[in-house]
Length: 326
Image (cartoon, rainbow, N blue to C red):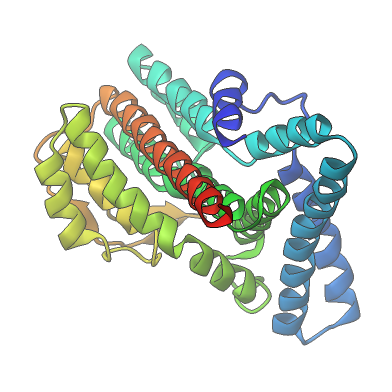
């Protein structure tokens, strides 16, 4: 199921016309926030915690229960729906497509066009970015999103299969996607969400803790397999992985910076306000559009490496179970 889901994502991506669970999560978050803010004025942290618990548990329970009963009624119906939902938890093709749009715009030399393209995948202000700044922003986003858009869903799908089969696998993957959506919508450190989004941000940090570190290590191995600077990736990963405001994002970003020989992060504008951040990497060369394609290659090779690990783990558990039954 995981292999089929990965292949589907590689072929289809996320077409705009196709219903997607993340849109449903977004609907629940928007409606839930409005209701809870009216019902619990002055108790924002508790209200945010209730919203986080409701959305993530609903995201887990609905696919888990439906697949649990569907597999008992018709195996192949459960298998097909499980593959479809597992595919929808992955975002490698979508991330690659958006990054390639930035690459193509950068190759055209039209700075305004490339700024518009990168604004679709980054949260920072883009109107002041130079061509190199746009390229770095795209590279950073792909590197960071390797963890939460690809490796983390594969991690929770694999863990679910090993521990309890397809219903648990998809349930855990949707639980994670709901947490990630909550963090992207309300997990901000501003006046509106500092308290309300605290639980969502903390949960997302916890769920990404292991996948982010795995992602950094996978990028180092992928750099060696793709002819990039694996030693530089390992060196910068060890030195700079904690030089980030996020406890997780710095791990894949540092490994990617080392593999490409770039200096990433640093100061950026958000809502017109400059936020100073440490530089990650050594900056041996100037960022070029080709670095975006190299980062996409690192992402896919890393994903394939972890997919192979997932499959090997599941086969090992299956064979161990057969031996124990004998």
